[in-house]
Image 1 (cartoon, rainbow over the protein chains, first blue to last red):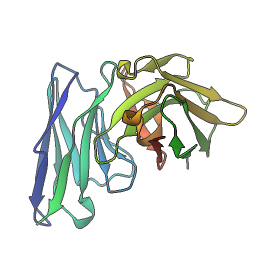
Image 2 (cartoon, each protein chain N blue to C red):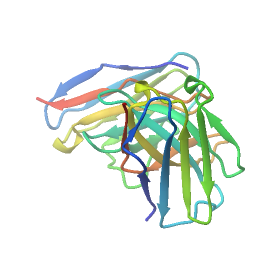
Image 3 (spheres, rainbow over the protein chains, first blue to last red):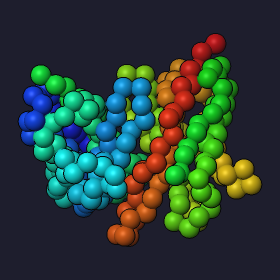
Image 4 (cartoon, chains in turn brown, yellow):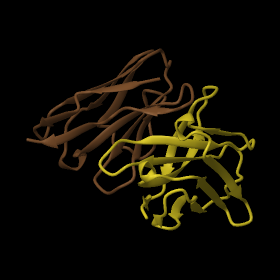
Length: 106
Length: 124
C-alpha cells in the first residue's frame, strides 16, 4: 500500500493552524499512525488509529479520516513543532510510511 | 518508564551480516501484548519498516529485503535482535527498534516507544 503525503513541506507563522494530508493507495480503514521526527532524533508517536491522541502528546495535535484520506492538524503552531511528520499504515504488510511533510516557521 | 537502546557495529563490510541488539529496560519483553519491530532510515531519507516480532512468536518481514532478515528475542537478557544478511551499501541507515503496542481494535498495532537509533554504514 502506497502512502502519499502532501505537501512535502510547508511554512507557517507561530499560532497558525496547520493541516497536512496522507492518502493511501487503497482503503486502510483507520489503521493509521502519525509520527513527529525532529532532526537527529527518533520518531515520536502522535496519533494512532487515525484519531487517537497518544498519551502525553499535546492536544494541539489531532488526526482525522478513514479509508484512504487522512489529516493531521496542528491547531496553533509552536516553535517546538518544527519537524518532519510521517504517516504510517498498519492495515497490511508490508507496513509503509509516507515520504514525510517538513514543517517550518515563517 | 520503558526504554529501548540499540547497539551493534557501526561499520559492516559488503556481503557480511549486520547484527543489532535492542536492549529493553523498564519492563519485561515477554509481558503479554508486547510486540517488537525494527525500522530503518537511510541518511536524509524516509522511514522503512523492516519487520515485526509478535508475542505469539510470529514474525513478519518486509519482502523488499529479499528474505535477508531475522528478528528474534533473548528473554534471559530482555533483548530483541535484528540480523540482515548479505548487506550492500543500500542497507546503510539508522536502525531503530520500537515497541509495537496492540490497540483495542483487532489487528490494530502502533509503534509507541522507540530507541534512539544506531547508524550502520556498509562499506569496505
